[in-house]
Image 1 (cartoon, rainbow, N blue to C red):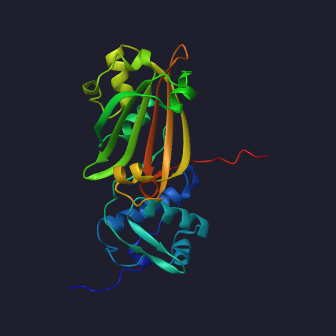
Image 2: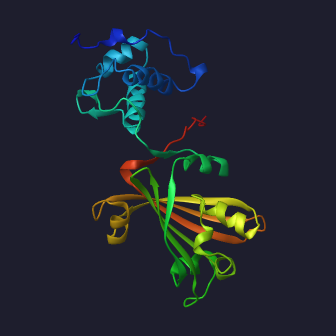
Length: 256
């Protein structure tokens, strides 16, 4: 059996060009192949960052960003002042998203399942804030868990004003995307979703639903869905374990 340690020569010598997109993404794609085929085995080290940079003629910043992408995919673990270690050949299930429309939201939940815990009338400050309801006026609230395989990925809480919630029942929420169930059963089209991302700390209910420690970091994604006439139809909060969820996007330099 060959026990030789793979080196930088195991990687193709390829010139990266900006015309083909961000350099770090090109580099990450190149590194994924030898990780996936076992050339760089699980438990083994990648070449040093400086060695990778020299081999491909890119900056250390580019290399580090590429490695961050691989780490986000669950393929490697970066270490301070040491080469990264391979931890998996295939990407882990990761709720990292980049969406600009409802189709992207649908793609985001492709392999997920929604388990509905309850659907009932409730009084909440959330209903007052987003639907203009009175302090003691009850709306409707759905609570559920979003999972991918055996892993719990999000605690889902959706609120509806009485005019909407009274027309729905628990069994109506058969789609992993709640807004899609609402559209189908009410015969309306939701026109826009206003998205807000917040950092939270897991309370007892969140910790129990997601199987995480009390006080763990949570990434909360709030989505207010409105119809074409700007009527607020649904407000959903998806709370994710921070280590399983990220938001990524390209930020062009538009400064003069």
